Picture 1: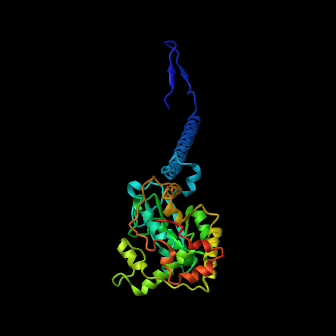
Picture 2 (picture 1 turned 180 degrees about the vertical axis):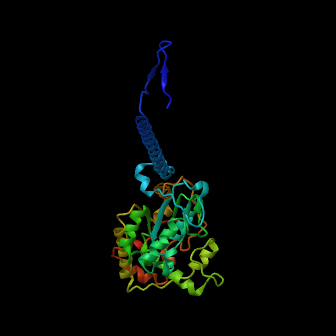
Length: 344
């Protein structure tokens, strides 16, 4: 190492030793390197933590991105953002979807009611999907079918899946619904499914419709074709010409059984978010359809249907053994069924 030399006089030479030894300098360099290493490591760790936090924040934002702050918080459990496996909702991905089911009985006006719902541009009601026995053979089959419908992976002529605001179907009480009511009610509550009960007040009229429809399955009165629902008055008149003979002996018991089935359904699914509708009320008061749209959180629209009522007017015109039926029901709780309870 070079030494520093100081000259004070011409003849005197003083040699000044170095300020620090080589060992001390090496130690200083080592300490400096260690400090730098610790600093660099701490900076890297902070950057890693920042990136991790950013990822979590992004996930949270993505999950909440579709939620509308203006929506009533009590309605949040009933708003869904499905991610179908069979197609992309594209620009409609953030359109909230409400899930519903129509619980009813055959020949109670559910077909007509469903066409009304499907006339709304934002509703997909997919028909009587559990009429196929395999889909209701056990709870697993039922849940698998429900998952497909509510994930918008179920396609029918009524499907408007991409931008649906409400999606559902109609489910008859005798299609596994009562048999597995506990599991199904739990599913509805967990998934936020809204239930629309639709029944007929006049169960005698329902019986007439059931018997006439059963007869036409074999008779095929419309040019050899069976139709459960018609779109013209001419077709309706043709089908209404058949007058069934009702079993007067079992009539009261049959009415009681139907009544009990309705009451049981209302009890089994009372824990769900639901609305109760009656066919006669919808016929007489179309403002009931406004209540339905509000229940499903839909923008208000005029709902229409092409279906034409088959059995119009007095029941006496549609039951062959009317006098016997009148005698049986006089003085019972079902006597009011003999009267015309709507005019349309």
